[in-house]
Amino acid sequence: MFSFEIFPPKKNGSIEAVYKTLDELTDLKPDFISVTYNAGGASSAGGCPEGCSTREIVCIIKEKYHTESIAHLTCVNSTREDIDRIIGEFERYGVENVLALRGDISPDIPPKEDFHHASELISYMKRRSGLSFSGACYPEGHTESNSLDEDIENLKKKVDAGAEHLMSQLFFDNGHFYEFLEKARAAGINVPIEAGIMPCVNANQIQRMVTMCGASLPTKFTKMMARFENSPEAMRDAGIAYAIDQIIDLAANGVDGIHLYTMNNPYVAKKISKSVESVLLG
Image (tube, rainbow, N blue to C red; front, side):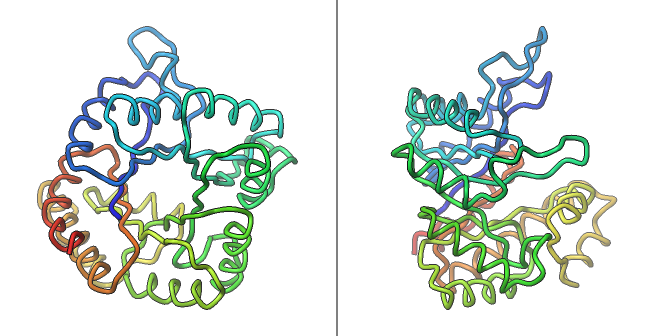
């Protein structure tokens, strides 16, 4: 299994840029493309029109590009009524697959009280729809968990609630993923688990992502960033090469699939896809 993640336009962003990205990504024939959560979109002149929501883009992926899609959905700021409305929209527009997430808790916005965990969201939607559900997993443990074992216990709750497929957070040391996978299988988690890979093409971008998700940086990776951080083209090429090495090793060890965080960069996705195509197909 080989899949991509993209994100909707930011406020005042252009939907045309997303179409251009999709034009190139769908040519690579991924198993699916997931779209990060965005409830709406900008409506200002020259910006993203009203149809820039996650729901709209996953429909475009299916209807225009004939590629399977997965809509991200967070629940931390949603009531049951909000989720009922969203389920109705998904079903009305033919969206069949949802990645259920709690979402980040903002210090500026008090969370709602209806859903505290993604497992609760999955359980609620499972009773009210015929949708298929995926869940997120964290090879080094969620930043709010006390241990990897505790996090895997919570992951099992997502699967028991109805998650049929899991996609991992980014990581840069395959050893962490293999340890996580062994523990997950021992805990009775038997659904497919895709390894999430983010190519390092911008040192500042990666540092922000690592701060948010808590992924560790192996020595080989930090040396690469230190050597090339002031040379954007060299950093891009080195980051692509690092991601390719990760994917080849993961494929050799029989992982269920690779989920590539494209950051809406089709050039990087194409370079990686072409390099690992034979390995993944083999």
